[in-house]
Length: 357
Image (cartoon, rainbow, N blue to C red; front, top):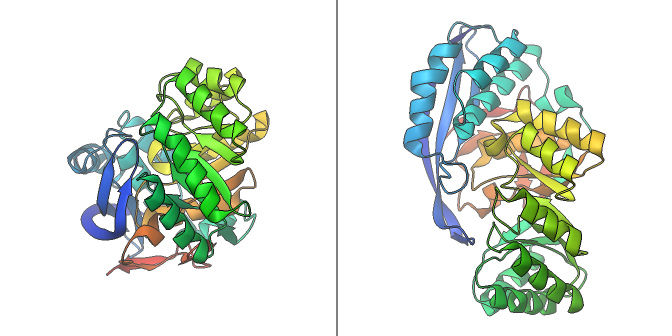
């Protein structure tokens, strides 16, 4: 199975409601779809979202990285020479993690097709069903409470509450949400780098004192501030998760060695795909650190790949793969089945994606 071409398409999928964080507001998924074609007629599918505020990647940079650098590097290579493929993909261009992730996903898809096995079984096969949280956008407290109750009524048992926008109001947001949903629902919060270290400690201690029972806080400080992240981790009881701080396996190793965070969030668009994500999983197993698998605002091709990784690995204990259920429609044929919080992995070869509507 030899790679003969790589083609790109664009998809645009409106969201059911605006997605708001401390960093941005988004109304639709605008992603690049990658198709890696082979001489056997097999096609591997990948996907990349332009998330400039987090990864630095835009549609233009993703397209240019693939067409001008990655594609010429991989054309003519055999899929079963997989380690060499991954090495070439990783080394042919620095950074550009979203472009690399899209192609990495397509290559894993082809590798699974080559041997007639679902990727999740190829990587470990730990389970075939996972349960995701759902994100509640940052808004005024009353709107967030309303959105939280709506999610609870759809069967979600875990809500990820976006904060980091007006620290005083963040405390009120969580109080109102907790009152609305009660204590049978797990609440995790994501500040998206919105606080300073001492501010984060103050806010989180207030939440602890209020008995809000927060499962964990995600990325309370700036991505580059490993010392600040450690300061927060050392001074609050609520577990701290590193997200934007972790792009590479080296980032993960540094944070684990420093004990700067209690948990790590793996996102394929930060790691450059599954190949490096697996290295982070191995590090987490060594250091005894649980992982969450997350996504940007992505459609089902790339989230489906993250589902397979989550299904494969027991060290991934927390799931944040709600991207497809936030979309108003699903333009992807095949792949995992998303039934609100319940995600069931497909048993087709590779990732089971059949095409784009």
